[in-house]
Length: 225
Image (cartoon, rainbow, N blue to C red):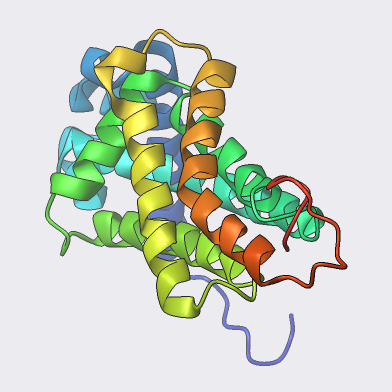
């Protein structure tokens, strides 16, 4: 054992084991039946813990959903950031879409769960720890988009942050609106792409206007970076 590492006590190991069993049970049941088709009692039963024990880890079904979805959301953001970094240099739009795609796919993996998750983050108690973690993830998504936009010399940091909030609002509506529930992921992503393209077009035009006339004009997808 490395210096400075303290062994985990039996009580803490038991606590971690119960938390993992609860998370696994909640993850499986939400995936199988959706949040509306699952009760906390059913999750406790599958996790083989008493209902009172479950409430020590999450006091409501919504908190259990947030616990589960936070893990998925974090993984989707990490995947998107890696894809976006690989797409840097392909223009203003492509890196943003590369970041957005796995996030949209995550939120639509089970549309009811994704909608409920975003609703709980926006309208639930922001002081609740699991919601705080989810809101921090949403903030990291905005920060990632902001960073991509600031690669363009014609977008200052303040405008980039505002545009990032607009883009996350587009994602939110595109993945939660009842009107779009029965669309395929690709149809939803295409619509989100069109909206982001329109949002960023004025900045692309400004870049083209200020370029030297000796430089070729390219499309938004392949133009300014």
